[in-house]
Image 1: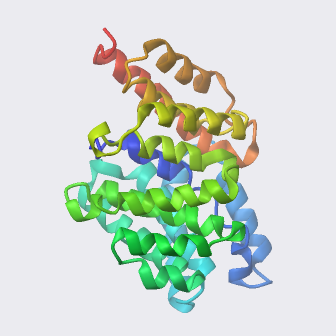
Image 2: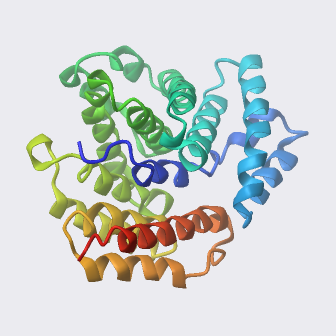
Image 3: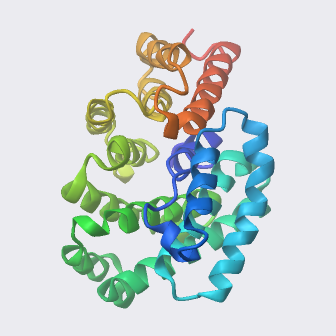
Length: 295
């Protein structure tokens, strides 16, 4: 696999997981729902990355406590999966490999439990070989898209963290199958993020193992079209996973410069996500120049 342990691969999953499920407020009861929703909204509109990083662990502890209290609440479990995946990908990553593994273990565990409760056919085949696993996909409908998407991203983050295990890498086709089902059901979900995800999946593997860079390019372009360019993460992933891979210098720098020139808060709910994307874009440009990658 191509640089499977790199943070630039991991960052996608964190950036796409920073929004909690729309129904999550119901979990904590009618009385606390407005407060819970306001906290989530405030977090997403945060421009200071340090505040977000330092504040997230307390939120994770709250979610752990709520899940312990209601271990079969599928919405809570999905929220936990998202939050742990987001925090780990954005702020931990390969710089702390053992911690990265522990946290992605929890994220994946929460996600699989959530989807298993949500869909009994998935629960029966989740550990089966690929031919049996995919038999559950037809049972999912558009309303199930958030569960499919966030389970796939948590699972992918776990695979990235356990890239030294061939058993983990062997799960990639299952993750790809979940994302393909999301595209079938609602390709515009979260600003076309499933197409961005597919672009990454099709470029982190060499062609001999299923990598398809030109097909990936089409997915990145479709994601930009669906998201109307508002989710800056898409440009970052397009640059890093396609333009850099294919040595397309002008495309690489143009995509990243678009990110740097775009306001992070044009869409309030994307402020933190886009702020992280702008930071990543600047780092990619600096790295490419320092390494003289295109020279």
